[in-house]
Length: 126
Image (cartoon, rainbow, N blue to C red):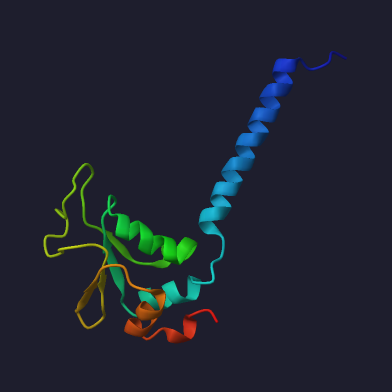
């Protein structure tokens, strides 16, 4: 039986490395977070966030939640290539949190403040 060539072995190792990287990326974005319950509570209580893809404050807010951000009902306010809130003309800044009573809170909020605003304090990790 003929031995596999060096190129074949290199290809197999390369495919294996790519598969590991894909699995790690998937896990990082879908791993359970200590804030999953908080994010789910906010959404269940009618909360949502208006964001813009280019907004640094939105990225900071998302980072606070980690992978739990996937449970937040978010509304993109900028069309591709735009640096305005053209999809949300009533928004002046992002992130903007929409409360169940129709009021709004603008800017990055601490998780503690969001839990208080939405009545989700029991879901804050100890």
